Image (cartoon, rainbow over all chains, first blue to last red; front, side):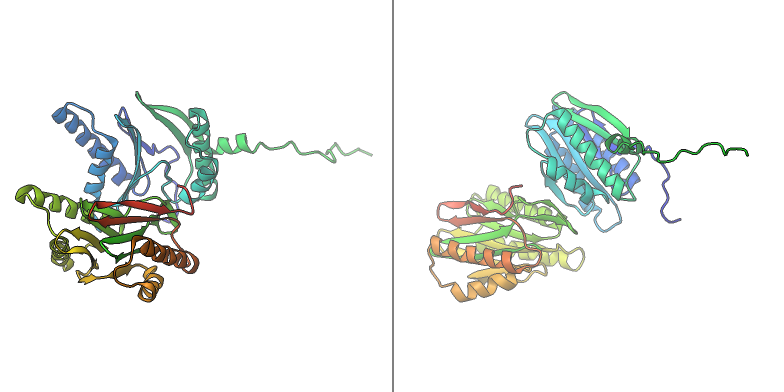
Length: 196
Length: 198
């Protein structure tokens, strides 16, 4: 088939539960299925322990599952973002079995491009709007250069009361809002030919 | 490429590891702690594949703790090393753990010790050990400057020399390093050597 864009409206941010999000990179089916499975396990934890699961715990559950399927062809590159008693938590989990705790990550084929923009603009004490704009810009630049990235740039915010969706902009429109087309100076206008 | 190295001094053992978490050309993190504190008087510096490193070291840590709960006394460093080697060997012909480990420990009866355990379950008790591309530089540095019964300052100076050599000569050198020490007062983080502040 070659390179084929089957959809420009895939939801790549998966809502695991009202206070935890997962991102999708790699195989869409694998990500969707295992995030849904993680959501089930998190709910079971809540019912068994009468309290919400921590982001550390949820990411470890997913990492252990993916580790047990190592070498069998799963393709998952995900970030688990959430809010628990210790505050905000962000983990990178992949199908190789790796799990990293961090304050910023970028995953997927376009990730090196996004890292460049993210690293140059990042400070720990950005406001929500500044952070959202930085994230949006990082995604846009990745979609500009990476052929396998594109469509819609979704931005979510995760706070003490759970997540909210901040924006979902088509990257084509973002391009023209960041780089508007300057009206060109017309040197010679075409006019009707003078009939002799 | 990941580097781990260690050496034994007078009444202590030192383990140094890089702190980069890398995926092909991307550095995801440069402050990842790869030296696990196994129990009060043991340190385990591990390098290897992403999932295997964390999973195997945590498995060993929990089993070492279980032994202590069951028997009321902690494992000796030698026993812990042999346990690890046994687990690596059992898994080797089916589902090998691609992890290389430098185990450092302090026992009251025998003092400090260092063990070299590689991914095919080789086990050696040694005075100095190193893994990774950095070992090409660290091993010769240590062979030249190491002597038995070094003080902490002498050992740190040697560790810094190794780190500097790795930084200047290795083509994709790791940015930051962590140094941990174990002596009669226990296993603890000593310091970091940073070039970036992730």
